[in-house]
Length: 80
View 1 (cartoon, rainbow, N blue to C red):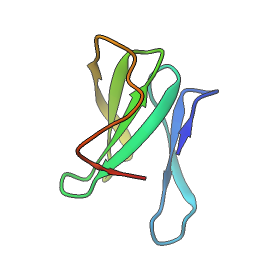
View 2 (tube, rainbow, N blue to C red):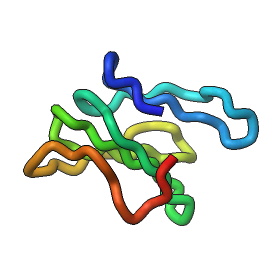
View 3 (tube, rainbow, N blue to C red):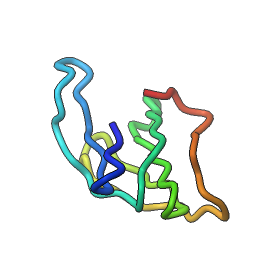
View 4 (tube, helix red, strand yellow):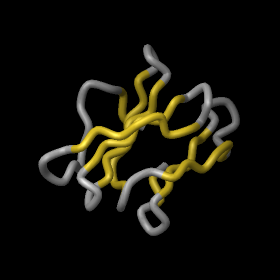
């Protein structure tokens, strides 16, 4: 779940439906997708013009991809 007001993403457990971690991402996260094959969470940061990548196993932001324009949606991964 993205938290645009504080530039974080809450990681939700699929077994308990409760927040298990809060991860700082880029400016104004607006879109999120999960890739079960890689265990990575992708977060589109609208005003930060980046996509943050969060490791499902460490629950930490591993890196960010700079985008030329404001990312809003993500394709190629299962949206949550």
